[in-house]
Length: 272
Image (cartoon, rainbow, N blue to C red; front, side, top):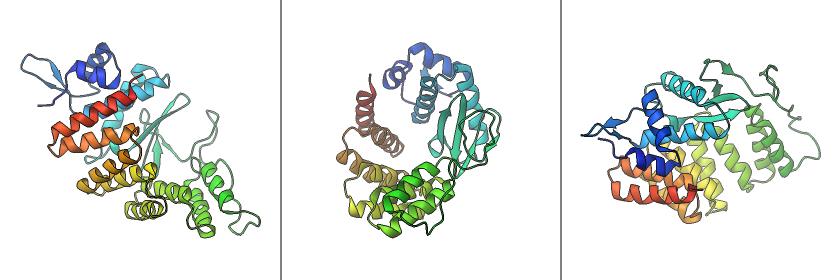
């Protein structure tokens, strides 16, 4: 049986008891029932509810959040989970990104790239990349260009980050960003390599550690992921998402006591 009551979930995620019950009744989450018929939630329910809360904070109407997340659960493959996708609000749209693909879960429409104004063509990069041999561009220029290209033209962004690293192999931020784009496109081993190279130059970089932990988790190396999430919170004791992921993995590993301790830290860090 799942382990968290309505009040536990409401307290941990800063939702009202009524909101938690409403989401359960709507079918957004599928909690178990206790001996007295009360709802009992698990970690996957927490992930889903935290995602819903984030969308609500972007002023997406509750009914649209429920519809989008319910449809998303149907659209993901059998081995997929909400932890394997990125869900965000772009204006009034809910957008999901997974393995290099972006789509709107409500309609199922695939998005080739994002543009600013609604109704504009979605297949153009935000900025056109300069020629690879463009004179006068240093590593920092290529790094900044990569950041501008990421949302609309991820392939060109990766090329820009690679160019930055050719000019400055120890440009840690370019290394991390390139790793993240490889990670998002499903090239997990390549992403792991870049995260580790970044950490060789900046051993306590919490972003590189967290990203490495996520890719290790995707690779099925749970114990290594747990150790790396622990390293993340040692490097940055206020890295809330690392505590949440660490708690989830420990709970899956049967270490409920440690999971609850880290979940409490997450709750304290995210409490307003």
